[in-house]
Length: 359
Image 1 (tube, rainbow, N blue to C red):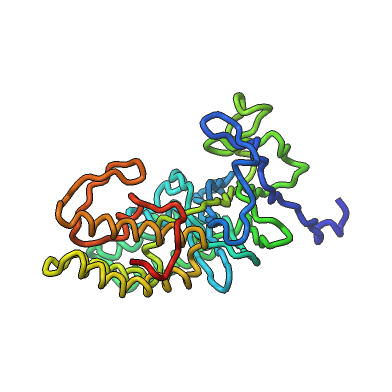
Image 2: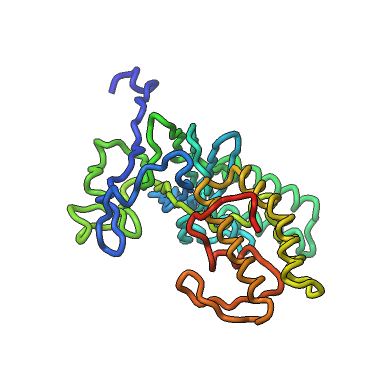
């Protein structure tokens, strides 16, 4: 080593690659690229998830660490922020948090993808947990309650020891071990799949020998592969779906549901009057669907068709409370009183007419 080498450190390349779908197993069978199609404009929802994160070293000297992922997902001027880790358990104590398995945490979405940039920024941190020095500080604090000692002196000693320990050991310091910032856009097709970020270069790891089978494994084939533990890593999944089951929680829908419910639960009016009042509310519901940025067009049609079918079925069942009917090949028990969007999925439409005319 030359003298100048002391002052020079070469940059390290790190892995951020999409895992081939043939290396992803579901029920012991490899997937294909058909299982992870491109996410095109106004055709699907995209959700980003942290599937798995791993720290190679959880102890440095007498300090223990646990992994924590800090992520941001930005799209169309909106940003979601999430922290994924065992830190929610700290109210029960922070001992052995490194033993907590954190999987499948949502980072952002579902997003009704309309093209343009979708940006992700994630960081894998090592966070200090249990250590003997921290226990020592707590013990010194308890000493202050013992009789026969000058309280002021003991408190002062405890503060000195605490500040000294924190200065030397940096107890409160969290360290970024691995970070990724990436954007997906029209010229770089957004595809469903699994992306691996690793604190290593492709020269250090044979990427073709990595398998995702529950967890990340390494080997000649998935049958003999062993859990991968050579480097810090995180796995980010880009998930594609074509329906959104939580649509009723989008802004504005609760108020319209209350109006539908008030009409359907009114026992003082008959089905003809209910239908007339529903017809007056329908344009408001249609407009809410039509202008929603949280839904793709095909799903708007399905939701409108499903809501209309549910309301119509309840109106027809008005004279036969709790009648069981066959809807879409399924037996559904209809309560004609009241209305809840959560029941719409039982009669979810198939993309029928999406019309402001309604009833």
